[in-house]
Image (cartoon, rainbow, N blue to C red; front, side, top):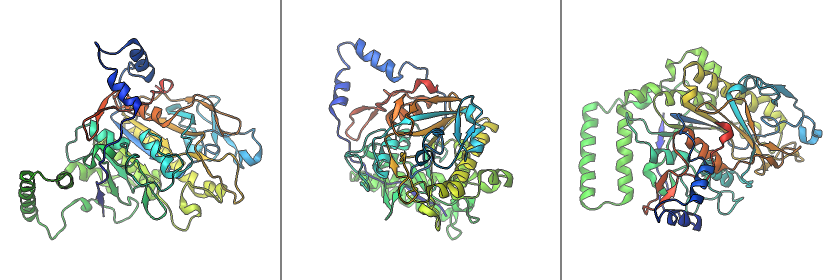
Length: 462
């Protein structure tokens, strides 16, 4: 069964001095030469991207740079670890040996090897990766999703920017939200100060379950269409009554969510998108049988149906070391070899290949990311700990130039040497690929103009 959640904070963000100066600088006949040069540096003058959709391939928990995109074959064993490297389709570029399928696709992939948040806490570093805004303060675990840390997520921003139709929202999160132990949600997953109406649709589901089927989007058997239409008419009358009394924002949000739920129920396009049973056994097995892998397949179907952004979150797995996640504080090497890397390599390569075969890769940007990397040295439990000082991520499709490696880390993959990238730059690049320049104006709940991103488009990837 699907459970759809679409609520959250809507308090406005505070505008800092930099934003006020940016707004105040637009006057006296337009932008100054300095402003024009700044815009050029940030990528405003680049041709707009042509991607229609983004799939965020989220390995949340912290995937290790050493064993994926930035292996250090010449480092001491306590840094290097036990795994070797593989040659890839890109001359001179090697990846960790546990990525054999992905290694054959690097001609379609661009890698960033010097990403930095300077934050070693899951939820606050994750907030920065999802919004482009550093958490206040840094290194804050378990921070609630509220002001001042309520900048909109990428999904929230896209829902604000892009009109929706056919019962399909422009941003969906699968198969569950991101949370710390105790089910404390990370900040940065909703629409923040834009208001709950723009929250990405969070759909709790398990596409790997045999019971996962289209009837979950149909009306219950005890509610025939006539009765449903009568209930909808009654709801509309109640909403009109609220309108006449200047209803509160919460009621307004409820009405919008009810309308969206109705559209989803009546949308044949939505029902087709969620019908994984129409996929061949070969394709389903190519992705893998896990909840995460089948969510990636569902993400491909959703972008085919017109969803603009699908975020697929890695989910925990019972009875596995480190709860089956990438937060490998113990048994790091065992976890990578037996579970994490095979599952990731299979699902990521399947997604890229599937999109390409269907002619969707050029219009679909895939972003492989986590909230940070892992420490250069192993701890006493054979694990690697949190590391936001330098880590790697990758992008493919959607106008990204394949075969590119941007940035470099030091000999231990601990700190950037060149080509440092911050989350704001990544988000500016993602929205550039979707056709939005960083200076695209959004407005907060108080109708104040704010730039879509304060980052710089990464020219080397385009």
